[in-house]
Length: 307
Image 1 (tube, rainbow, N blue to C red):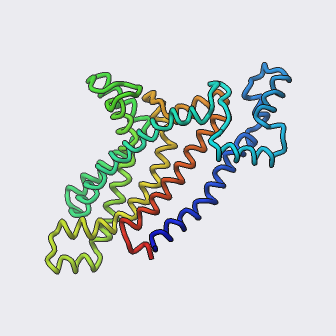
Image 2: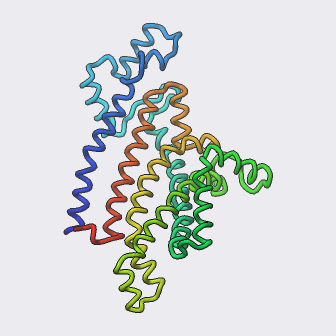
Image 3: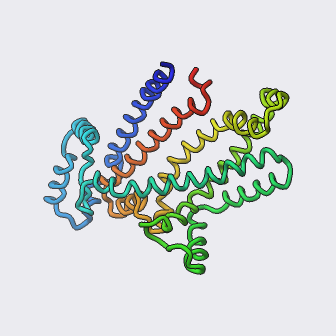
């Protein structure tokens, strides 16, 4: 019963956030400097073309009517049509979104796989050479942004060695380099967070009590300390998941990955505002969903939070 109450409470907290995101995305086309219809059609558009497109998108109606119409479209999965690609925005999003989600999940999985053992090892061997080595490597990972590490990986791994494809999608081999590009910086951040959280938990009284009872060290570290230390790490993963989803634009452009990021760049360069709205809405709602799932996972990782 307590778990159900927690889930319902989190869902209720999410409703106003969803409303705010959808409302801001709706206002996006109205906040564009100048006439958005004129910008979409270009300087050579005639007055009749501008008037027809304004009527097609309902921009000649009162703002409140446009807002109600936009909400009805969102609830029914109708986000309008792309002006340049001549396709429904929802179909374009459903086509590209899985690629971005696949890349983001792979990047987070890689980051967690690297950060957890490295952070735990650094905490258990504090002030030793292993701790210093982890600190240097994590600092190196933070020092190379995606727009720098991506081309370097292409030159070394793809062009010089010929191990992996340069760009595109379609096989697990195409996913490796983009996932490494996005996951290394996150791994560096998570490693530092895991180390800090583990050091704090390992200094607690309950850890000293568990060791005094003669529990095996792996039980003390992984079942007791890590379970409590994982809470701030989960928070960071949830926040960084949304950041990776939005920041995939650079990586997808470098590796010609056919995801939501490249679609957003195309929409912005073509001044295709309905498509821009759809891309931003997809990223925003995903960010909300990920943070909701993260909140719910807290109770699994640490049952004390249910109280």
